[in-house]
Image (cartoon, rainbow, N blue to C red; front, side, top):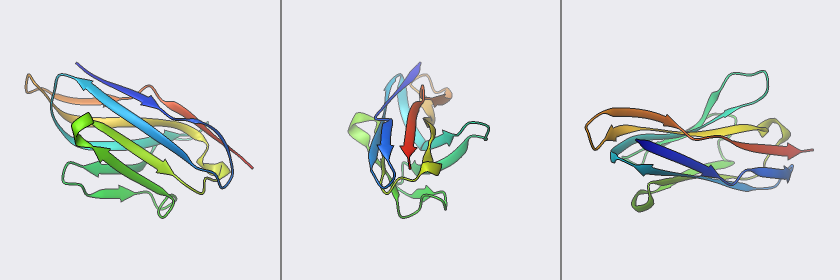
Length: 120
């Protein structure tokens, strides 16, 4: 079993910053993909940022230059630093990890979600 626990959401004014964290624990042999998604009311879940174990990162065009994804391999934790937040960033943010368990089974797990609300 692999568990993901998120933290760091909240309410912030436009132009402000928040930092999200997602810590993975359990029977982890390897992690090859880590990503942050978000889902606003009435909209589909979208990929915001991702990072692979190679260290390469990708971002949605809407957040480039404002959001930064990073990871701490020793802690199996990823972060999403969100700066210059806009009201349209308001959503529930989910982390997602893909990899292999110690039993050599693939996993594709999600965090519980954390609410980010940006007021104008």
